[in-house]
Each structure stands twice: as structure tokens, then as C-alpha cells.
Amino acid sequence: MSNSTSFKTTKKNKRFLGVRFASCNCYGRLYSNDEGTAYVGRCPKCFTPFTVRIGSGGTDSRMFIANCG
Ligand SMILES: [Zn+2]
Image (cartoon, rainbow, N blue to C red; front, side, top):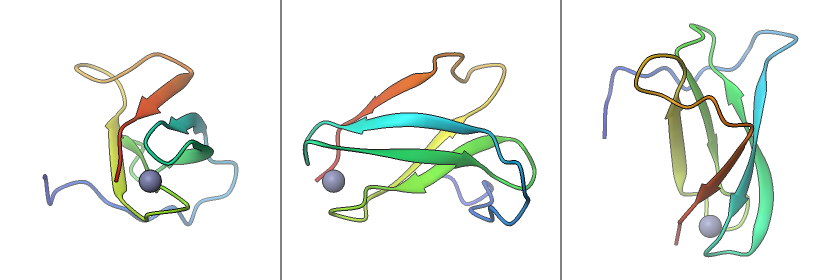
């Protein structure tokens, strides 16, 4: 896992990505971090952290399926 991605999401009006946490069978959101480099967040049930890079090499999709747990 990369240590270079900030998990800070303190800005207002953050963009977010809807996520389905498949293993826990629940939904949540990943919010863009303060640097705007990635969507970051955790599964609300098992607290597995997820990072989805924004832009080149990242995702353009609006819905992300995460396998956690
Ligand atoms: Zn989970």
C-alpha cells in the first residue's frame, strides 16, 4: 500500500465516489482527499481502508466495487 496518498479529507465540497463493499454487502462513499489525487475512505463495517487514484491510471467510473474483509 502506498504511503504517499493523503487520507485527509478536510475540504468542503469534496467530490465523492459511491462504493459497494462487496464482501460486507454494504454501500459507502470514498471522498476526494485534500490534494485531489485520490478518493479515500473505509468500509463502514470492517474499516478496511481503500484508495482509488483519480486521473491517469485511476478511475473515471462513478461506482466502484470494493472487495474488503
Ligand atoms: Zn468491509
